[in-house]
Amino acid sequence: MTTYQALESVKTEEGNILSVVEKNVDELPEGDLLIKVSYSSLNYKDAMSASGMPGVTRNYPHTPGIDAVGEIDASSNNNFKEGDKVIVTGYDLGMNTAGGFGQYIRVPAGWATPLPDGLSENESMSLGTAGLTAGLSVHALETYRGNQDFEGTKSIVTGATGGVGSIALMLLSKLNSEVTAITGKKEQADFLTGLGASEVILREDLQEVARKPIGRSIWDLGVDVVSGDMLAMLLTSLTPGGAVACSGLVGGPSFESSIFPFILRGNALLGIDSVEIPLEQKSQIWERFSSDWKLDLAGLTKEVSLDGLETEIQTILQGGQVGRIVVNLT
Image (cartoon, rainbow, N blue to C red; front, side, top):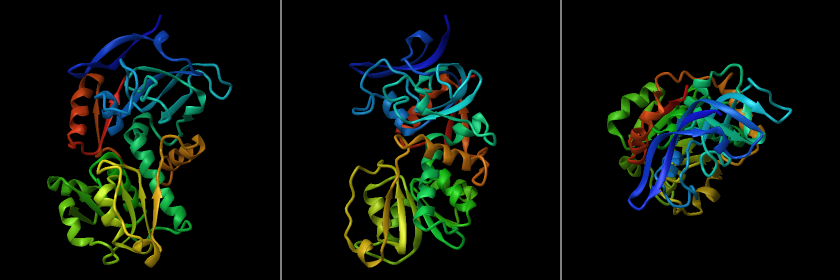
């Protein structure tokens, strides 16, 4: 009988309570692959699930964690064998299926992709769903531009100190775009410059730069993780033919815009889904992060154990996360 440690969220009348508990692998759902998890990572969606926010996780007690990397302990699928190292992100992992904040997960084979040779387990979770989302955003912008390189372009990234924003900033800078970082954290300006930002604008000052309904053409490319008023302002300040890739809604699920950016400048709004897309698309992004998109993530990440995870969950819910949190389950 194999037991393991997991962070469990229990719903009570006073709110959800988090604790590290011992569980048995026999309690895991059915699936093709039993995976011994080595690392996971913390995303805003994990914090929402852990805290019991409505519309995220249906049943409690529950183990969150939408990201996991580890070694296959048992496989009933011919495409994988014991000892293979795999990444699992998205689909239902950590939502209603026991997730990566446990030392074991059991999932369908269709959720797992091989860990690329050029990427360590720790690096893969330094990226996690946040990195995957950032990569998909940049890939969408590449495709929209007909795979032209980004040399000489000006780009803008919102929520730049968070997981998606910080990795998008690093990646765009690596691809030789001149990146403006938007943040509400004035004290993190040097951090963002260190990641590759050529300019840092405070969130409250963006309105002075980007005016409605259509303003001065400034940026060719945008990666937005905020939505709401922030996205509306970005759309007013794109250059002709420019585009914004949007993947988040911390600023609200709706935004107000006019038709002018689309019909006067030919701008585009590109939606990014990193959860339910075909596995082949995820694998393509992981391969690029192991090769031409390889990033130095050492200065971006903080590593914690399961015991230290509750504090980080509260921090991200309060808007205080900077960079990425990697969870060590070894």
